[in-house]
Length: 165
Image (cartoon, rainbow, N blue to C red):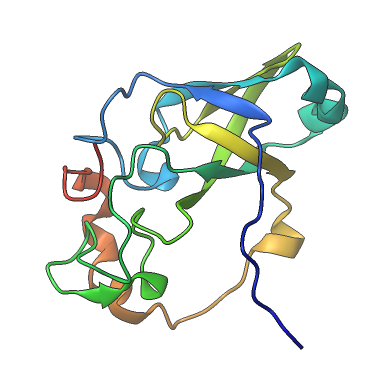
């Protein structure tokens, strides 16, 4: 069986409107940005896909990290000063530059979704939106790797220019 693929085409369904025009000083996770608001502006042809979305408190956004200039298999993440394999981090310098953000839906206005928990640059392409369902998405674990000793630093850690523009 051949699993090799030359390319996969993804096209934005929406774009994030955010106060962040640079990665410098941005929150590094949505949980540390609960008061940061943003807006998702859907392309008109995708607006019918929002039917029923008002019934959810949280959304999962799959995005393209367009502000990341670096792709690396080894990174020094924002919460640590040690090098880790990129797949053992949440660092944005990923091979496919895909982001995942869980945001709180505040309200819908036609094709616009107002949310809080913004950790994204202005103009971030949104590739998909999924409802957050705790029964599907929450897992209890005590194993969080190297993050175990670093999570307490999250509220005060901001992005710097090591991976972004």
